[in-house]
Image (tube, rainbow, N blue to C red; front, top):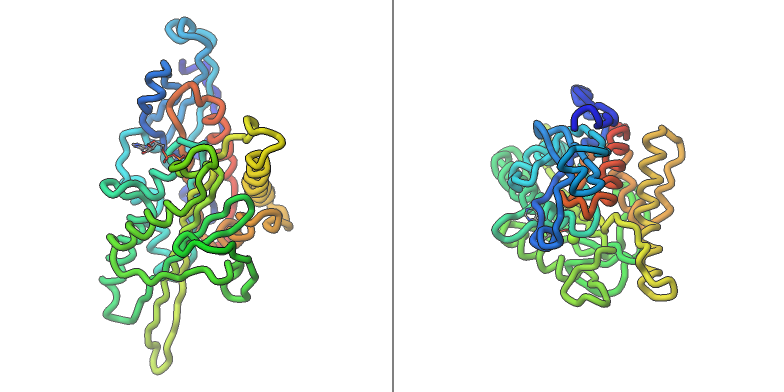
Length: 356
Ligand code: ADP
Ligand code: MG
């Protein structure tokens, strides 16, 4: 296949930039699902050396066997996780450094991007047996805080919210939609959002699972989370210590975001509520991609105000923030288009410069 693959943007050792002044981009491939196997899927993604991603379009079974007319592309990321990668490795490679930064008072953001079913929620929340980045990050914070508490006091507060259909809702205390307002110190905040004081990891896992059950479900598929809902977990770590005779307070914020499905909402009925939702999802994700474009091109004006999602992410994308993107993909050739789209955006996100 080698010669026929086209290299797309080599990052190489770009990471050597020690100031961490750009978005770190990771790709995670999930295992082939039973459903995909039963549908006769072929694998169209290959990850080599935990870095390179090869995407090949299989014209037909025959072409595949003869390696003919195989079109493909090559991408390279900060790290790419094959389908056998454990949750702990995804966490330690992608997010552990951000957690350390948050303890130093630097904000950090991780967001999962990809089509519905590509593994975003598994990566972020995970299961009781295999907790994901959200839970592992908080566990790590507890551990690190305990190791340091001899020289000051830490408090850890959580909030978990959803953006669905351009409406913001509290996932820890569901009720009326929340309004966004600008706060001089904290940036964009959702007014009245529950701040939950966390003490143990088990408690956090239960809380987040409950929160996830509060995510909006698809009208047609009860019990299934809507692919149109964005979930944002924010963890604020406050550290107070004595400097001589005065009390110093240092605050760091970690935002962990499970984005809505990135697939285009073309299959929706034009006249129905679902198409309205589709339009709004497009609005939030479109706004996100416009912001990414503006940041990549170094534009002065970044259109954060175009959607609720980008308003909330304002200080988590371009500003003084360490940002990580995890792009989730399926190995199946049936999802080729979505995977190509996801890899394209992930490739683009590598160019964003952030000023920490
Ligand atoms: P998304 O949130 O992107 O829509 P999910 O995280 O819900 O997708 O994943 C879809 C299904 O695939 C779930 O049943 C999930 O448990 C499974 N899955 C996703 N990623 C993995 C993985 N890395 N290992 C094992 N199972 C996974
Ligand atoms: Mg999900």
